[in-house]
Every structure is written in C-alpha cells, then in structure tokens.
Image (tube, rainbow, N blue to C red; front, side, top):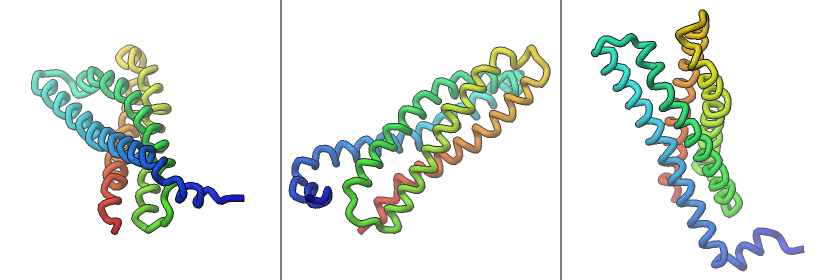
Amino acid sequence: MTSPTLIIKQNIARFTFLLKLGKILRLTSLSILFAGSAAIVFAAITLVKAAQANGLSVSAAATANAPIFLHYSKVVAVTAVVLLIAEAVDSFFTQKYTKFKLIQYVATTICCLCAFNFAFVIAPEMQYLLPYIHSLNGIQDAFQNLHETSRILFSGIILFAWLSLIMPAFEN
C-alpha cells in the first residue's frame, strides 16, 4: 500500500493550489482575528470614554457598545473555523515539525479556543442578558462578569493570533 506522503510527493503540482489557498485563508483569518479584535477593543474603549465625557455612565456606554461585540462574535466564529481548516491543510502537507511550527499550531489552537469560547459561550449569554440589564437586579453584575471574561478572551485571541501569525517568519 502506498503511503499518503509518497502520493503527495508524486502529485505535488496538483496540491500547489490547495497549499496556496490554505496559506491565504490562514493569513486572512489570523489578520482578522488579530487586527479586527484589536480594532474592536480600541473602538469600544474610545466610544466608552467619549460617552463618559458627554455625561453617560460607564455601564450605559458599555451597554450601548455591546451589540458591536455580539455581531463581531459571528465574525470571530467563522474566522476561527476557517483558520482551523487552513491549519489542518498546512499540517497535512508539513513534512518536518520544527519548534516554530509546533508553537504556531499551539498558538492557533489557543486562539481558536478563546474565539469559540467568546462566540459560543459568552456572546450568547450576553445577548440573552442585554435586554434585562437595567431592569432586573443582579443582571448588571452577571453581565459585568461576562464582560470581564470577554476581555480575557479577547486578549487571548489577539495575543495568540499574533503569535501564530509571526511564527513562519522564524522558519528557515
């Protein structure tokens, strides 16, 4: 029986397009997760400070910004799935796993775990609580706890997307 590696070596020209597409999807996904998440955080901080300067409370300003994060969670989820597919393609065609390649895969995995946690756990819970945030006791505290968790997850997304993005620069 012929090994998959031998089949790939014999048909490498056929796989060139798939390799290029995987690299493009990987870079695009990581760029969105890194720069998009950083931009969303920067915009939210700027908007809250501007609202605060105009006399709005921090919680009212943050509540007004919540829909941005909730909509962005869908972008994060799709982008993380595309990133995992692209990394799977890259992993399939990688013949030698260097420490930089392994760091890249670990960073991608952690980034995607943070992204999925935000998109599928935190964001839906925030969306559920948002309409009740100013009307029911305790909801604001629960929402604030989710917000603090989302800050940690966004930090993870940004840091590990950046780390995965730069690792190929260290390869020979």
